[in-house]
Length: 198
Image (tube, rainbow, N blue to C red; front, side, top):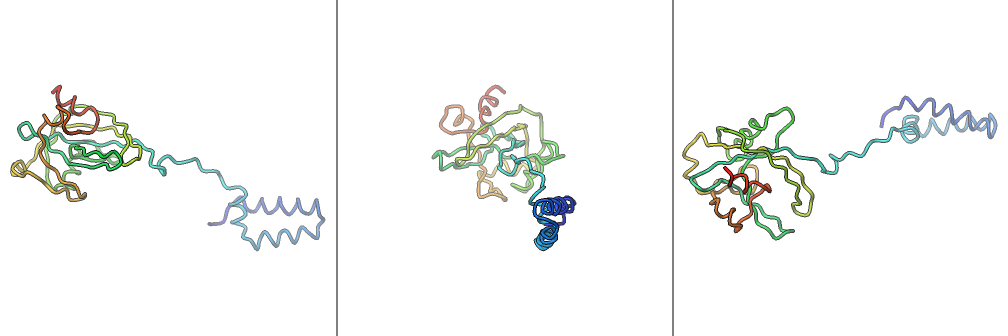
């Protein structure tokens, strides 16, 4: 806590008020007490500016992310996640958050390097999905940019599973039919319908 420029006027106001009510002899005592307590501290306590509640500090933000739709025949590359609060196993294409000043395509390329140490070619944007949800009993809100993509290294298409480097999850190929027939859950909401219309 540093020195507040408002502290000096506060001390003056308090000293004058004490002198007016109790007399000059008490004014010097009030000034000494205020100075002993710390001028900066008094200024902070009395006249600090109230801070607006930050929704960011509570985690209530809309998260932009980019997701890659990578096909191997009729199978989609996804990672498997688990929400124990819902007793639900779900799947989602790989990708991640878009950082400030970064394009969604660049974010997708960066995420694949971080997650699989793999380069991808990003194709056309298939759509944008808004997803309001709860995960592990916490609210979430995402805007997902969904792109067609392909691995630069064709050898990755021959791997059945790929360990995600920055997460305990594993990426695998899952038949699109498992999502369209409802036997498995694909997030974000609306992605199954978007892929079925392609």
